[in-house]
Image 1 (tube, rainbow, N blue to C red):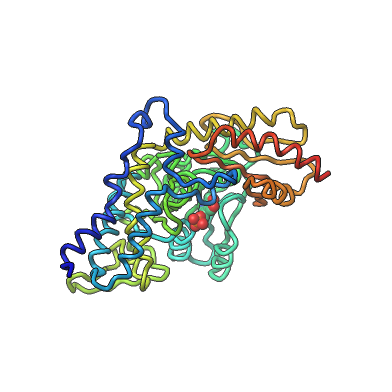
Image 2: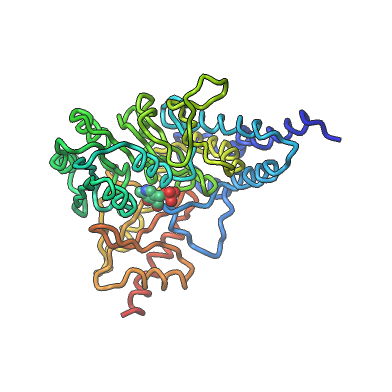
Length: 414
Ligand SMILES: Cc1ncc(COP(=O)(O)O)c(C=O)c1O
């Protein structure tokens, strides 16, 4: 019979598969010309569909999926002590922390950006008359607004013009909304509908000089901007690992500036004010993770993704996605009804955001799906568009398929 130690060694080997996953990655990826065809080979891309909806959730690296499957089996084997799997979670915590330049003791593992943001949005004490700040295209303001209403707190929402103005004007727009009643504000690192990268560091600095806390939504920025929390100067940072990064679905994290951890009430977790050994105290970031039985396999398997993040760093991903997005813009330039909601270059990430005059964007998206091209219709705040989000596994020929198919679909819908 397999001893526990042998079994555990095997299990740990599987869970720590990330250490060997970089095999097959072109070392030039981090700096030189990339072999994107080889990168595509690291994913199980279903060849019969053109997948351009990666800002929602990308296909995981095949190795990440495999590590999740292995960890899933192990996590259901009663011979493997739970505590040993928890040790793997600590390794993930350290990897996440390294990727954002933070101390692991300030990173909580969460299921996604939504949970991470809600933890801050529902967990800070506010008083009637306080205000919080967001732009109308920030993610899912409804639930937050409802919880604030119950406390008599105002959610002050303003529009960012589309296309966005220059950096200085964006900063001025935010500053103009900050009042003496503003307690904290939400800032999207990258706006999900347009791919617009916001000048987060400058906005956070302006907020801090007024005593306003900052919650940065890194869902669309984490794997592409690579800024890190110290450079951003934010108080809270939330992100998902299943978006551009290529992790399995259902993983995210929350960074909290260490001195603020005590101030945030856990949404579902608990803490104990006791000196008992092993007790999770109020200032311990793990208090947010005490939510009962967790999908430990997913958490533990995430470690397999980090070698890829490190081998294909954010700047490389961003450049590739911008190249694909610019190809789309060039290809549709002569289609009269089509308008892009953003410019090119560093102020935007790899998202193509297309508004089509006179068209119902949802119908266009459905018609494209019939042609096996998957994109997303968005209607948020002052933005209505079709969002085209390629991945690092996307081929130029797939972008060209959309360029050829969209005008045909629009003619058929007229
Ligand atoms: C900007 C932004 N924030 C938050 C989220 C929520 O991410 P998740 O579903 O992983 O919680 C999304 C989802 O697309 C997003 O685009």
